[in-house]
Image (cartoon, rainbow, N blue to C red; front, side, top):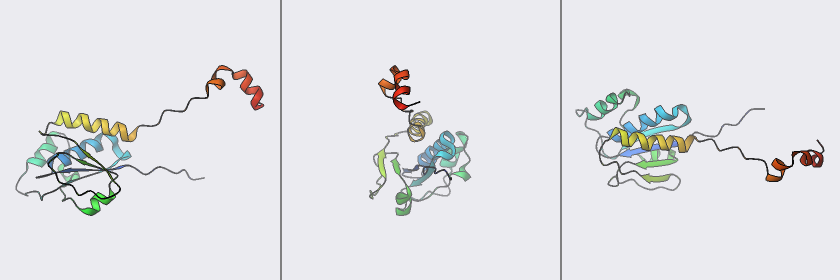
Length: 151
């Protein structure tokens, strides 16, 4: 009998300007969660190809810029996401039904602050529910439970 695996959560990080923060957040989440989460990044404005700041930020974080290309925010990207995280309150993101929207106030591109937020998100999205414990009466009276259950 085939086992069903739940779909991976899909997270879209959105930033303004060159998208450096969203690309960095996506790379950090991929590093933290691996294949358990589908991650993408977008910016609300096209990146200037001559501006290499975003690539430098990714390289300094130990991420390959080629693995995290800059892309412009689209309606399709919003529809594919389960969670849309805007990395600034000034970023204007259209709200369509379906995804959960969050705003993280990342005022400076502080890798430590962003890493902490991303780690918490990875834990939240990949946490395995704790096993349910047996009812109190089954825990306290195992002999009686075996007799009642006919075991």
